[in-house]
Length: 323
Image (cartoon, rainbow, N blue to C red; front, side, top):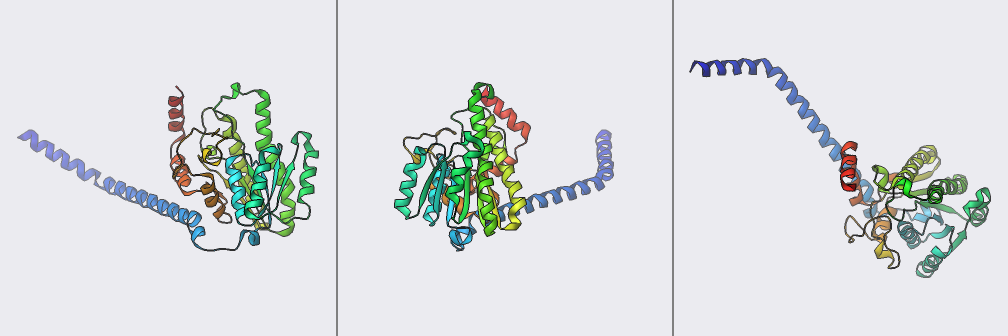
């Protein structure tokens, strides 16, 4: 009995001595919970502002806000092709810049017939270095260019860096980094003269975390993302809107039965794997609203979740999947 009384007395003394600290810790916990609640509320408001309000509240036509013509590089990619079609649906004429005109010739003809817009296909050989820009400059002359859309080329299948042929590495870096930068250099002066325009760089959600077997893709998308943010910082006050668009998986099978998904595993279309036209419709609605977005609200939820996973947990999980 004496032992029990001694323990109760000791417990009471310890509780009294730690009581100020317990109150302090409770206050810290309350402040942390309030901070997280404010951040969650802020993120929810941003989600509504970027992805829902622009689709509900009517705004000026895209041609009035930015211009009559769009230059699209990388239209062989499913997302870029769907984005070009959505612009055409809004009455924007399209100039396709490609190294292989056969890959977009049918798309250009379809857009002209379906939406009554003008389309031009420019074949540019970027191996000619500076001379590659001449046919592009000629196509731009006299046109009200309001949009430039650059799209990162995806890799055929997951490969480690040493498994990729040297020429494939050079080609991928050239197409995704050098050419996209050159295209911006060619189109931007005309936009600055008119003090309006939009540059949309479509990369991938791969820029948010490193992915196994996709070293070059992760690096290229990371470059495009930072390139877009730097451009927006430098030219936004001059009337140029620059957007970094970082989609996650899009259902590429739906767009073409002949072109299976090359950058991601096949999965059924749904909320998190939208059809290309659905994604493009959402993405175009964010023009002028957010300079850095996934373009599609379920993808934004995915991005928010990935961003909160510590790097070491992500790397450990990737290694476990590989093994």
